[in-house]
Image 1 (cartoon, rainbow, N blue to C red):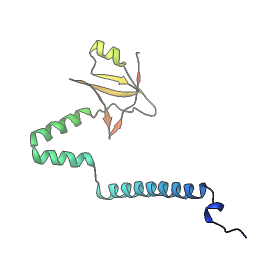
Image 2: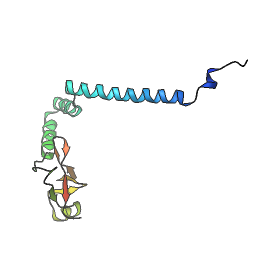
Image 3: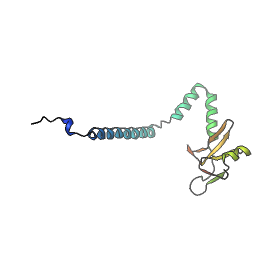
Image 4: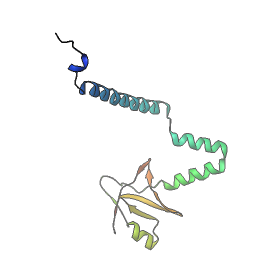
Length: 131
């Protein structure tokens, strides 16, 4: 009679698949816990950074809040029924327009380039009327 070793009978998948499932389940559970904790405690990283900046330098915090407010745009319905028509980036640069449609989202002109227009921390959709 030949001695039986556990290694002879098991396939390579018998180790790989359980480990893969354990890692995937761990990642899924960590994301769920992070989401629930964020919703429960309102842990917004951006708010924490701005609060820390406000404590250290109130003038800088005021400028940051003004800049973030300037990036917020109200254009009506940008998704769903009506789509906002704006010039493309090349035409907007040439004409000196304040807003442009870049990669199907609204961009606002800033002194050092373009900034994405946001509404409720989501990019606003648009359609370029020029190339």
